[in-house]
Image 1 (cartoon, rainbow, N blue to C red):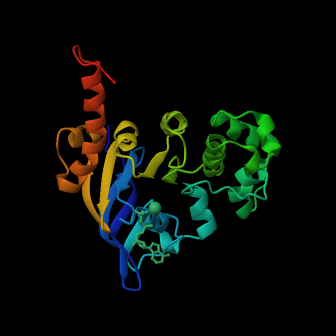
Image 2: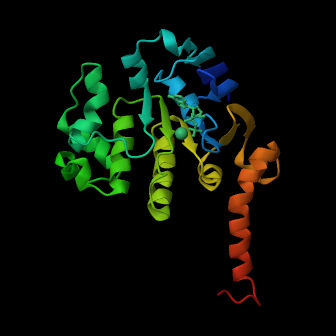
Image 3: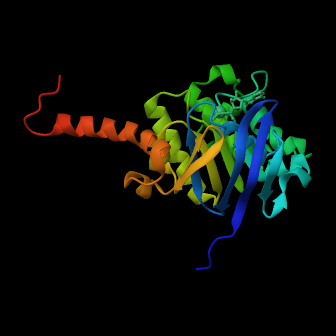
Length: 260
Ligand SMILES: Nc1ncnc2c1ncn2[C@@H]1O[C@H](COP(=O)(O)OP(=O)(O)O)[C@@H](O)[C@H]1O
Ligand SMILES: [Mg+2]
């Protein structure tokens, strides 16, 4: 099999806000079809790096190439159709129905989504077609994030970028949605970049984990390599959290231990 072409390339991509360097020259290549997690502490530059992809933020240095083209040269409405974006937190427009929220992206490029297509998108994220007429405040947090994913998929994007999509959800809902997104990634042949501060989620869902620290990309490893100790100090300090939890649980299950 030929090696997959790079769909997304960060070429010394940098972003400063006045004196603050949010992203300090990140270079990496993301192959078509891969599922990449972007992990790092709060303020390490994850959201800024992601927003450079769909030009919500313009680089102050370097470039971001999508399909070989500098994103800043592509018409924003067309680019944002090819790049589905799931916002950090909730991010639905509260005054619009579920159907209107889902259809907003295509509408910006002059297309009206028919009700059948809305129903199909709801089905993809396992919501009833009747949800189309609901308002966001009539949904649970998990249902809202499902709508957020349906909205990101509405334009049939090649690339899905997600900014801590499940951060505000309870662990069970979060796990179910993560698994769902991974399944949709396979089924729709997407390339996915997901920001998360949760290393356990990254290790479980991604093919590759990028670690950011103070605006720099400090590790780019497979989950297997990270679990085997690769990636350096910052990456390993993040891997230590789920590992210690797993070890404590295993200790509770081993004979002779009485859990309290
Ligand atoms: N619009 C902005 N104006 C000024 N500083 C910003 C802005 N957006 C982000 N920053 C700063 O850039 C750094 C990286 O932020 P961000 O990309 O949001 O990190 P993360 O998503 O990893 O939490 C932080 O220091 C943040 O305060
Ligand atoms: Mg962020």
